[in-house]
Image (cartoon, rainbow over all chains, first blue to last red; front, side, top):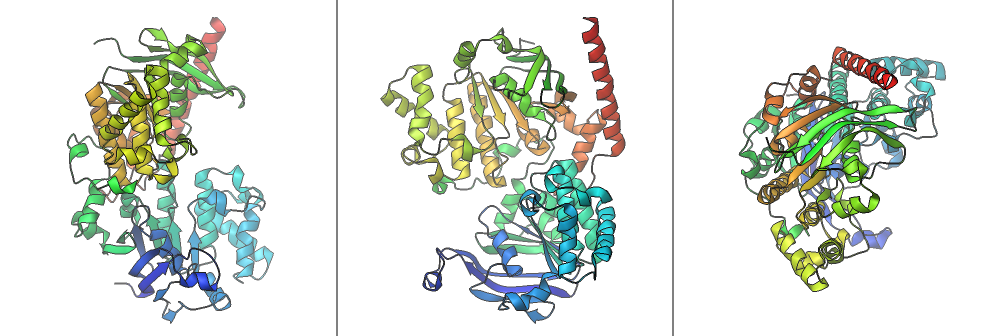
Length: 282
Length: 297
């Protein structure tokens, strides 16, 4: 098993109903109820669950974008749970994020070149614009985009191209850890396959640890080594993909897997399996 | 074989905004009585354009240049707006993609569900409400009175989709167009909704055109399937055959690109460039031919 890179223990997160010191004490709904998760160096871990399972909140807590009410996050041996903005800054380069919708995460007023070069200079990965541009060119080659993409704007690119830019922006900083939140939902299967393959190759080449959040268990199976299954703010099952998909231990995991429609005709599938209670969902 | 309920013949359309670029290329497909026909393809393949053409809601920048949409012995493309309005809702209904935008947020569910029953079936307000209640029970909503009295934002996505399905089947239409009806839902809810659609469709003998980008969903609910690429039919046939032994390289590529939890090697294989090149050549030859044909006529 790989050495631990990121270890979270007992994470509790609740969203306050409004801002201000006093209001924050009157905590809102609890979204994470004591979650444990670990990501090894160079390991790809899938975080799966349905809407409301807390998977996105868990990702945000790992990156320090939300403050947990309890629990700890240890990154490369250092407890980073309580770090303030300034103390966290050196970590930002090492912990990167790829967003779900690159259209809204890429500034439409900036060229792709500016979007890629600025973080390189900001984090001191290159000393000057010349070197940064050279790194950007190398990265564009690697993710399969032409070098003149630097002169273009995000809205001129296709969904698949934008997601390659999102990946390039994250990995050009040579991070140790990348969080990817639903980055292929909304893409056609062929484009999705390209993006997944690229990500899988990059994590191998760069020895990147990746937390891959997705509602799609089949996608997780295709690129992750381990998987964490979440439901209503708790981890219900965790283990190597091989084992979890072949022999799920939790009834909920089994139900999630059974609900995935495989592209093969199976006349009994529709009526098979327990139906979840939904009457209360109204 | 009996006459199909829906019979699309040589349907072609162009985009006026984009230099008259063809977006449908002599599409032919038919949906038999009580049959669910899947329409699959990647974005831009023309799936939605076909659905919109049937419903008479083609956007202004799209022009149908040829073809016929035969329904119950009439060509829907030749009907006047008034004649089409009489058919829609009553004989042809839609289950839309996004349950959160398809309902009017400021009107209660009972009002929205009874409109059609009053206007198209001539039921009284009271009779329409009783019918709406029965319909919600049919889509397995356990507390129909509460749902009827709710506004859309008070319902979950799955519940809203049930309401829309109930509304679509309300007037016992002969044909239902389902436009990616489960795309926005979680997998467990998706399975329930698919189960529900199939059981309603079977019980009422409804014909259905089921638009989807997901071959898995198509496998579970469609009797027959048409695969589209750039507005052209690439492959068509019984779902079991098309999925088990696809004849076209593009269909094979789509299947290979589709990740499957039971086969970890899938999902990382994009469509090979030579398959795309061959398809584009096919389409270019088709367009050249169509242009020459038009010139002759």
